[in-house]
Structures are given as C-alpha cells and as structure tokens.
Length: 214
Image (cartoon, rainbow, N blue to C red):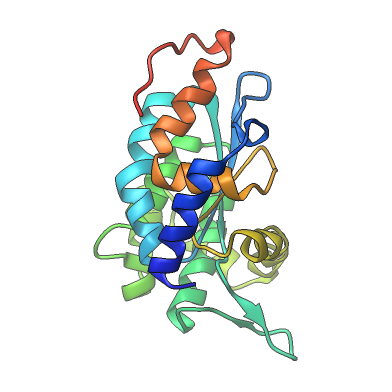
C-alpha cells in the first residue's frame, strides 16, 4: 500500500470508527503487540517519536510485546526472506533473541528497542550487538541464542502472530491491543498513540487517570 493510500485509509477509519472499536483496559492493563521490522522507517519513527514517551507516562498500565518479523515470508525450503533484505532478517533474529533474554524486564526491552530503532540503527545497518550490550547482556549469551535452535524456535511465534496481523492491517508497524486485530484501533494508535492510551485508561476509574489531550 502506498503512503498516500495508507493515509487516506487511516483518515477514513479514524472518522467512521464505531463504539465497538474503542480501546478498553483488561483488569486495569492494556496489552499491546507491536509488529516491527528492523529496516522499516515507519516502525523507527513510531518507536522514536511516540512509544518511548507514552511508555514513560503509563508504563504501570502497559504490557508491550514486540514482534520483530514484519512482512517476512518463507520460500519452498523454509528459509526466511525479509522485506528489507538479509540485514533485516539478521537484525530481526537478533532482536527476537535479545527480547527473549530480557523477558520480564519491560524497561530494558523498551530501552533496547529504542536503541535499535534510532540512528545509527546498530543491528540493521552495522550488524552490531551494541544495543544488546547497552542493556547489560553479554556477547556469549546473545550469540548462543542467535546461532542455535533457540533462535530458530523464536521464529515460529513471531511468524504466527504477524501473518494474520499483516493480512488484516497491511502495515508495519502493526499495533494490536488485547489480542484483538482491529484496523480502527491500529489507525488511531499509530496516529495518536499517547491519546489513545490515555483515553482508554481514563475510561477505567481504577487507573486514576483523569486528564487526556487529543
């Protein structure tokens, strides 16, 4: 989908969205899947300009799961082919390994992915472990995942989560809340992430959030 077509599509959905698509908390929390790909500039802009700031404001209410797979496909032999080429595949695999090693540490995961999706884009452009090292991991544990069946096993859940999301939303980064693939919610969140989260939290009295801006 072209950039112009996507913006027109987004505009339409933002203004015809129904009450059924309003984002809500689940037990006071919002679960979010963010589908990314290392070479994707739209994913980089979203992470740099919207995700980090919103996470710092509402981290106690957010459960963010990154899915580094993008539009990758498999050939007849089962080999993974990535939309932005071999470096994209290399970096996505690294990111899956690092995120797995940081499981349970939300702050470290956000810090790591912000590093990867900011200049100089270490894993994608340089095949560097710089961002992994910056969050306290060591080369041996990262390389063990990357070069063994552990890294292979992490492909399957990322692929399975991405295929239906990409088929429905047709955009990277895709944003899925509470395991519900909803094009309207995705469009709203991609355009105004902080407002989308804030208003959902404000609708839940248990969060104590009361003031939001569009």
